[in-house]
Image (cartoon, rainbow, N blue to C red):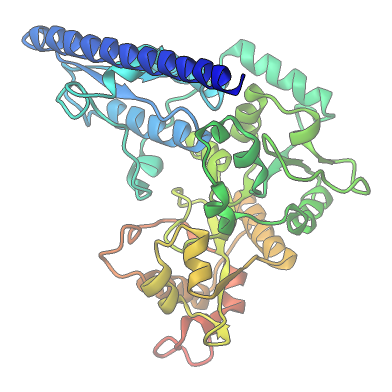
Length: 415
């Protein structure tokens, strides 16, 4: 009986293996055929296929939008035809719909496989949408390409009313990254241990003091997210809305972020949607230190790094020299480095600064400007982020001046 079951199992495995080999052969033949056609058409018009990073909302948003801004600004030969290729399950359907208004995109799993192998991949007929995290010029100087139709605006306003938000009301989106999304999302199909990203997570409760400030100033605070670890406390102001659990949809994810006063979040996928519409961002709990928002109208504050070996916080110079690009939890653990989240007061200071900035009430002193210049100078001119345009939070920098190691020349105790 056991032998018969084993034989059946082996036969099933062999059938699956045979199918996969046949599928691979067909895909290879299709790739060779398509390459031949593209080569023949080249003397008339070059067709270039661009695989879209579809499975994560941040990459779907930023890689695609960056390419379209560059295309709009004449970065690429006008005689070429660029075609986007995605599978049928993008991380956000509304974003894909909006990109399709501006660019020809084919959603087809087979075509995606065909262009992803030799001889097309790596050829002149293949272009991967780049993103290096230092595209400050494009997002500060080229106007957004995405837009909502009149019908979508009507739908968005109606759904806002369902949340109690009228046309004359203003609101801020806020979000804290947690581990739930990557463990429960379709990305788990990759059978990957996503704990390597745990260093990026933070507690949503630390954002609530800032949310209360927003409400007290007359606005609404909307907690964003697709799959979240825990709900907001039940005992909260009625204008602090747990959108992620009570109202969430692909359409409203994009609509809300595009229409909010600013977004209070961290460096994560859904936050990147704001940059598509030039919406100011306030990032808390940033790690590693190389990341900052693209817009000059945005602000950010950093997670602190505690060294168990040195028994103290690391200075910015030490972080830049040793942990500038560390993006794995285990590497921090191996170095006995503990990442310390921003406190609720630090996030509140960030929200106050951003609110005053958007309202046009913000003024910086000469000492404030000197601190900013000195902080930026720590990165030198060769780091990938050396041209970043956003400012680190003013109060945060002032209260953590010891982490800059030394005082500014001629400023005495001004720092």
